[in-house]
Length: 536
Ligand code: F6P
Image (cartoon, rainbow, N blue to C red; front, side):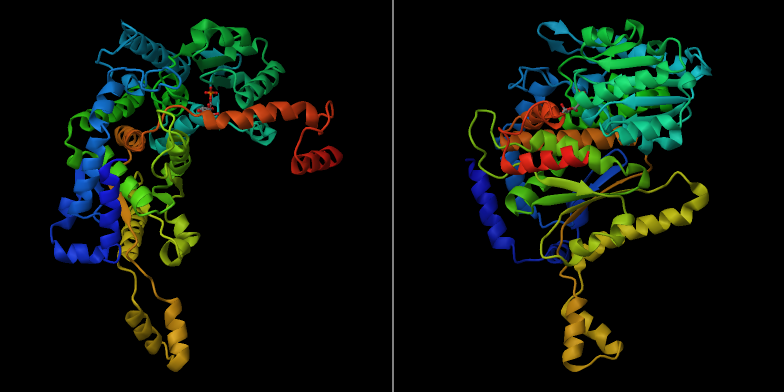
């Protein structure tokens, strides 16, 4: 176990009783000292209990755990995903001028060629060169799940001010409700369906794809002609009947949850156009360059990960909330749930040993201000501490509604301030006195109005949510997950934990259909199967 873990634990024990507000009082330059910038993006982590000593220890831990060497190994195409024997090169999808060698070959000519094909197809769909049976494509349905859905779905909403192509729809759930409701509103003759699946075997996606094909086949003579596919498996897309000219491949060194930068982003590219998609890639590449070159103490992804390690592994806070004050980032918490929890929710280290600390935290969140009127009560006055990761743009996309934006920003900053400062008992008492309470009742009423404060938060601010800024934000979080994984000694790029449920679901098919019995099932599962069978 690295000595840094013990030193961090000792430092936390020694400082746990002090208040973040006192750190500001002791250091007038704290905000500047505990914040970092990339271009116009500002990351402020001064409202946490990290002091100079903690930061030094955390940076020491990162260096000791070999973050820099591992980072270079990733960018160089080494097979750092060693439980699957794969390189990890989603960064190659956005660093288009680079040359990256995998198994002795430069993979970049292929990356550039595929991007060019995607861009050409996207522009053909947008301009009407590619048509459906009924003429110009009006709607695009992306069928995919997990990383083949969350990225483009999140980004399509985030970048809706840039959308000037066909309307985008996303179907992920095997629950027929979603595809039924989506397709019910569409004209099959002017709809393009993109089947996005790295493996092209995922049961949810393939079931939805077949359903969409049958729907289209009711009125379109050649339904497969209105399908495109994004996958690593050319054979399976061909077997599904999709012409190779509309199949966009990518290599196994792009993990599903890291795949939106390549062809999995095709739907987004059709929605916003290839130029804006390239601006998104450029934003990601800018974050990559910063991640590779900035010293650890000024490095946004490293700092964000050190804050995460401090809160979860050192302070023991079990979850973190991602709170974008940006309605268009409504899907970002779900996207980050997969990115962070599928990557770092592991109980085994690279070498097969057990981790020396807890691993990935629970990630959750909702856009502000909505959350304020729902779960912030617990964040402010609950018995547990939830570190909050706020994010907000200085400027919105609705200049005519600037007063809305000012309220939005004001609320965001106010929440972070309230978490920091809280409201002590004396102040609560004063308020209750003014309200006319006295004696025991005053004490009782005041106690309910106390805010403990001293609750940590970070703030990411950026000028406006543009394609480039979104690219920076996503790459920032990707690298945060990477650094945390390296510090924890785990492989952030496999996801074996999703397999068992898939296997059991497959085996339950014949049981639910009544073809086989429940003898080998546990009592609870057997009872539930009986219930479903008799009520279904
Ligand atoms: O089951 C988990 C997972 O493999 C994710 O990692 C992935 O993003 C998702 O399923 C979808 O996989 P595919 O793109 O192969 O359909």
